[in-house]
Length: 495
Ligand code: NAD
Image 1 (cartoon, rainbow, N blue to C red):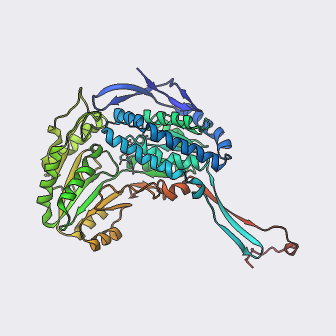
Image 2: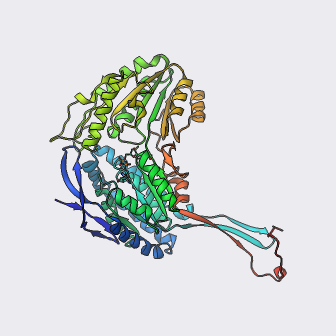
Image 3: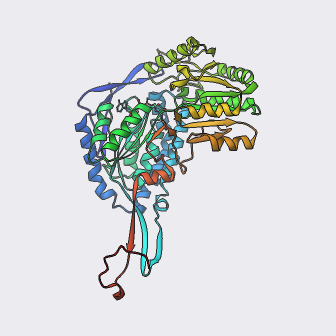
């Protein structure tokens, strides 16, 4: 059986220690094994990244961005290969995987503009004959630790910017979906990136801990569940590293009585069941205000029943969950919701699938009458389960959303501009959609939630991403002028 290797200094490194399974979620079959790096393998990768940093950080912006442009072109030409890998290991339908690649490519395109993004400021004659200018410089080797649900896009939120800014990278992808990272490493090599600038170590907790503890890792970008994000943030911060750790989510869609209910139902289905609900920006709770609830629930249910679930390589709308454990977690959550009194309007546990073997499927599920105290509401389910919470007023809906510990994404559906504007101001969530259910920002804005959805101050990509991967230096200059000679020990003031 194939063992997915590590990628260090521009070459595959065959794992020598323990391995873990890589499954095809649509069939349930083990498709490969993946090496699980220990601290020694991580150290080799970090050493490679450290050695490469010396030269890469000194390489001109013109040369660095030439490599970025080539990487972008190759991704454009061959992105379908990457999409096929994503579908095979994650399970999402091919179209969705292509969308993931396209959204990742947008960050590469943003990073191609690094010469502009790194431009500092210049102030002439700030004090008499004194000029001041600012620059941003790379940090060193940085670690990227990514989740299973976006094997290509989430790493691409970070590495194009890190690399274009002159850093070197050690990527630790999710051990459930390791092959996309290897494919991208080979593409970098083809694009002309020097060996050691982009490395991949496969593995799980041991590899993560080794990266967090490694003295030569300057910064950590992590994406995953909230408990691990919190742990990563705390552990790496204690080591003096710069950290951004994006966590879990529970995203609400508030539907006001004046909303276009057909549009709202379409979007609730797209955002709730796309990628089988395994998106950090998936809508998991529909908050129906006033008397729209019955009509909205009926519309969502009608649409959910038309979805075809099956192998993402076939003509389906929705693929499987990533693992047997995820499948059980989701079916348990549905059972707990029903037990607590929610009405199971559409039951994904009864669904049929277009797939061979024993894949990890759960069909689209709609629960009505969900109450905030139920576990199906409080826990992140990360599966194709939409909960409907009924409230009487806009204010009650906003209070519910603001009381939730997560603050990743949210959306309001209404035809009332004033209500939408008020919502955008009052809601305590990092990414907000107005009649847009999955408001993932463009690459030139920054991606990130509030509260338990992000640990650290800085969001991903956009100018915040550029700032994360660089540090600022301000230079104050005075060229020799006889007038400045002489001793003066007071604090310098501007004259
Ligand atoms: P996860 O937290 O299980 O794993 C994320 C990464 O952490 C993986 O690389 C994994 O190997 C590593 N890891 C797992 N357990 C660890 C441990 N005990 N110690 C150290 N490292 C560990 O998350 P997942 O299941 O791969 O991904 C789904 C989660 O990610 C969901 O909670 C989802 O909301 C979240 N997510 C958030 C965003 C965001 O932008 N906020 C984006 C995508 C996914």
